[in-house]
Length: 113
Length: 114
Image 1 (cartoon, chains in turn orange, purple):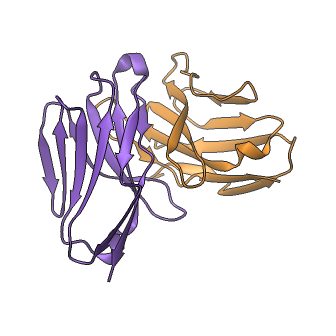
Image 2 (cartoon, one colour):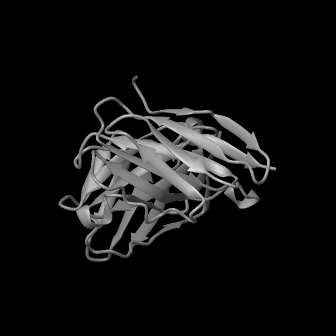
């Protein structure tokens, strides 16, 4: 597609449930990032994938968070045993190479009730 | 690691006036500085960027300046219009050892009054 696609756009879940968020990067973009944006705040880095290299997971806030990406395709971010503080917009971005800009998706708004 | 501070957090200007948003960064190895505009319910959109080998860049009504020595960079919007109203984020990016990740400022909510 023309842009980064994220699904679902909105997700309401009960505390303690697991959720899976999906990101379809722009075709051919080798790098993929996940960010979290709490209400009224800036973007926090979560995880970075580059091709088949080991991901940089240094931003994941706890072991309840994990992400996968196969090659240069779709990525999924999984949050297990969701907590209310996980409520946020989760944004995905991809880029073609080091000298290219980052394109963001519209995000998934997660609400944990 | 990198830390980016952004000021002001809110900015209200009259249509036609200029708006300036300032950011500072801590890591002298950072070499790429983009600015993003985020409208309600949407993801951030890149509006302009600057690399560390350039001091200023302009694109129509938008300009960005970079002072590497002082480690600060600024966004300038001239002749503001109501459609410029949004949240603006600055960011700084390091090199390969930091996974080329963007570290964002906390955002500036710009309101352009008609």
